[in-house]
Amino acid sequence: MTVKTSPSSLLPQPLVYGAVSLGILGLVWVLATSVFGWVGPEVLPSPFDVIARFANLTTEPFAGAALSGHVFASLERWSYGVFLAILLGVPIGIFFAWAPWFRAVVNPVFETLRYIPPFAWVPIAILWFGASTTTQAMVVFIAAFPACVINAQLGVQHVDDILIQASRVFGARQHQTLRRVVVPVATPSIFTGIRIAISNGWMALVGAELVVGKTGLGFLIAQGQRE
Amino acid sequence: MIDTTVTPKLELRNITKWYGPEGTGVLAVDDCSVSVQKGEFVCVVGPSGCGKSTLMTVGAGLEDATRGEILIDGKPAGKPGPRRSVVFQKFALFPSETVAENIKFGLQMTKVPRDEQERRLREQLEIMGLTQFRDSYPSQLSGGMQQRVAIARALAMQPEILLMDEPFGALDAQTRTILQEEVQRLSHQMQYTVLFITHSVEEAVYLSDRVIVMSRRPGRIKKEIRLPRDVVWKQGDIEQAAEHPDFIEARREIWGLVREEIMAA
Image (cartoon, rainbow over all chains, first blue to last red; front, top):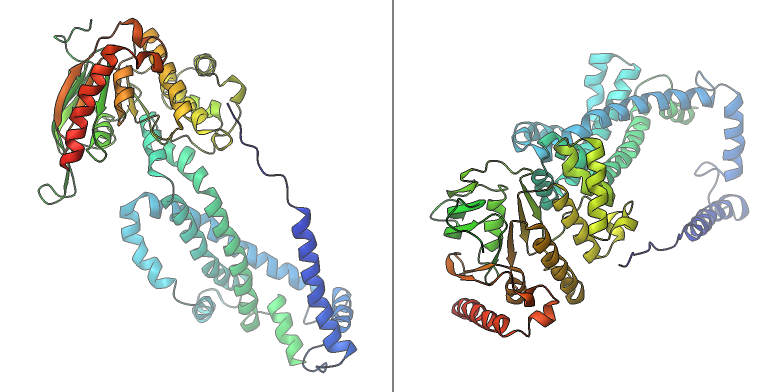
């Protein structure tokens, strides 16, 4: 009657390594811009200038709002888009793997549309929703959705068939097997998809804001460049 | 003695199973009939890949036979359900659930009342020596303990028929011996109706009332060997049993049949 023990926590070390690696990046930046002046401020400003400007932006409005206002605007669109992508993408991914007929019907459409880059949707999104929060949220959604679908699908596909057999043997119906056996086992993969969706959505959002809109971090960057 | 003239508890009648299209696919099982009387312990042995696990999967109702039927008490058995419990070779425990949740799984699915669930859970934890692991997760347990949980989960259903598909095949030799002896003791006490798949001739001789030897693929029934049931040598340890002349004789006969199939492949 042996019980395996889990390995003891290794948490402190990655923290140390992480701090060291980021510290080196900061050091190189300082050395290149402020100490040796290898690159001029028109190519890359020094970290001290960046910090000073950042502090300034938090209090003084720029391009219509203070930094917090732009951050809030971006976060709002981002969370709408990502939330909707998770809400629709995860169940669709699960059903792709669970119901072959559903996959057969929906997958061709999904595979065709997902090769259209998120930014390519901007013109049509503007036609539909105008230069609004909805437009940017739609771009976020389009960037975040496939990761949710594909990872949920993979997670469910990789559930060992014998677990599904066992569930049936012990009297579970399809939906019970799905809820109690399949989804819990697929959860790590589903969360991987959500993590990718979150970052994909964020990157697409800032990109979309560079092109369209009058608030948000991408807009702020575009305005800063024009000055 | 088991009366073989009455309707069997479980009957696999003229089972043929093709994987892929009939005629061009793979013929796994060819016209096999196996019946198990109430309270009888039947082992199916045969060379690897002979279709014995297919017989189990079809018998459990997890796959449909291409031809033939599965009967319980002479009536079509239908979908898998609580009348037939299965113990799988690879345990098949639900990894996100504790030992207790795994054992109660089938009871919850079949809507057994809560206090009865708890009673059966405690009973099975006790019988299988799992009480202290009640709240452990399968990944925290050794293979032997995991298979105890799987057996407990199957027995908690109080099934009419217990199907065991090479349940000790994935265990180390020592753990296997202990579990063989426990299953032997339990099945004697409780008079379970068991269909047991194994590739171990010793295991079959030790545990069963009747051994069915299958041919190499496509699996057909090669021979049935009836063994004495209520004999003293079967109720002790397996290594003691293995020294008894009857055991040696049965093992020699069955192993000879299995060897023929392996050599002919």
